[in-house]
Image (tube, rainbow, N blue to C red; front, side, top):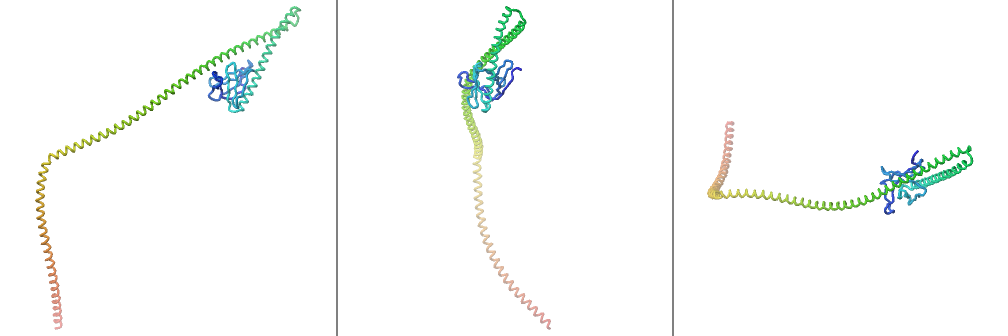
Length: 342
């Protein structure tokens, strides 16, 4: 049947620090499967745990091993073949208790298997010795019917002894393999420790370099800020300079215009004198015209007054005329009446 799992659980795996023998080193980043295996061929028990492709526990249970609970969720056992101490951290106290009970059960089974193996070896050895003595006696006595039976038993005992020796060789080979594996694991642990120290040194160097680069970046950022401020100031000065140049060009155009105007100032002054004389003559004429206007206004007022007087006289005359016309009409009516009467 080969090797079969008989109990499985999950736990965080740790190993004792080979240097200090006090501190725990995590062998897995998370909880992994931890299983008890039974090898029916060798009649042995092992605890095996694999994290990915890496075997982190390969411990053969022996009667001398002891599983110790160090807390409510943590237990440990020492493996002299692997030259280390394994620690398991469980998620609950019940899981720890089940694992400890299974450890004790497997330990007792390993002890029984060892005792049975020793009994078989001792029995085989005693049977071999007895067969040898009985064979000698039979040869000295006589060759009877029991000789064939004794030879058969002797062959069986030799076969069992050979098989036992073969098992011993297998165990020695396995022990040598485990020692070599332990040596490789020890070398790997030492190499890992050296690598960790090297990584720590490299990390420290990288951290210092990172701090230096960060400070350099901050300095460069400050310089960039100063450069940007200087560029802004230069841009402002450039705009101010362009404005001043534009203003200077405008002033130069105004100056040219003034110079041109300065060239025609004498002509303008002579024209201004001529215009002034004309203006004075016009003012004199205007004064004369105003005097005439005032005289005409006076004549008009007098004419208006005479007109009003004439209108009053005409009105009076018309009123007298109307009275006379009325008298005439009355006279005509009187004459008409007289004519009618006559």
